[in-house]
Structures are given as structure tokens and as C-alpha cells.
Image (cartoon, rainbow over all chains, first blue to last red; front, side, top):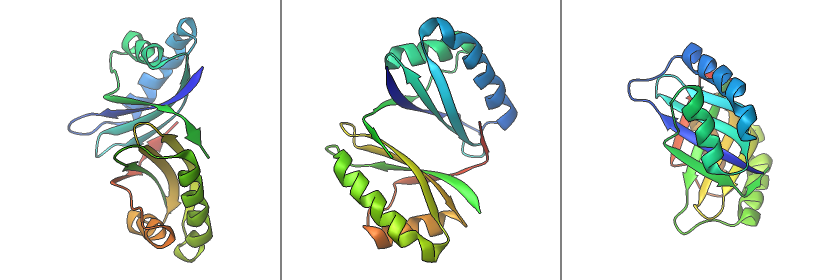
Length: 83
Length: 83
């Protein structure tokens, strides 16, 4: 298992309620992939979403987003250090 | 006070120890700015650093980085929702 930060960019911005709903779908879908979406942070006006996730690998994290709501991240980074 | 996520991109990658040292300098410098650097996540190979910070505004968060070590973020996003 590793920790990953993914970044979504949504042109035109994004509503908090839509992100919250998508996150609930992630939580419902993640079990079969061995993934745990931990936290997210949103800049609604800029359309930026950051998701912190524990996953076996980046593909598994993306697979949850794809199955849950189809909004796959634009970037995903394996976290090698944190503090 | 608001919450912000900043993103640094360092060409050629970055070492965890260097980020940890810079973060310690942030913590030492932030008091006079009313800023609180909360967490950071690093992808050493990609040279990506994400910093979660509470600050009166984005300029104050940047001022701490500038005074502490000079490595100002490439992007900073005001967080309007999180979960």
C-alpha cells in the first residue's frame, strides 16, 4: 500500500456538493479495489480538487474514480514523504 | 483565516530531508504572519510538494515560505470545501 495525492482540474469550476457526492461514491466503490480515499480539498472557483488516497498502486486509485463516477484525476503522485 | 493548498514543482526532484528542513523553517517563521503550516506531502522523484496551510490569505502563506527558505509555491489554491 502507498499514499497518493491526485489532482483534478475541472474547467469552469466545480460545486462542493458535486464533489461531496462523488466522494461518497468513491467510498462506496473502493472496497473491492483495496483503496481508501482519505481526504479531499476543493477550490470550487478554480475547479481544483486534491484527493489523498491509500491504494495498492495509482491504477487502483484511478479505477475507483472510474467505476464510482468516471471523473479520473488529471495527475496522480505517489507520496514518498510527508509531515 | 482560510485554508490553502499550495503546490511546488522542483525540476529534477527533491529530497525528503530537504523538504523536512524547509518545513521546520516554515514553522519557525510563521508566527509573525499568523500562518499555520499543517501538513505536507512529497513526491520526491517528480519534485512535487503539496502544503496544506491555514493563513489569513494566500499572500501571508507565501510570505512565510519566502522568509523561511525562499521557495515560494508555484500555485496556491484557497480551499472552499473539504471532506
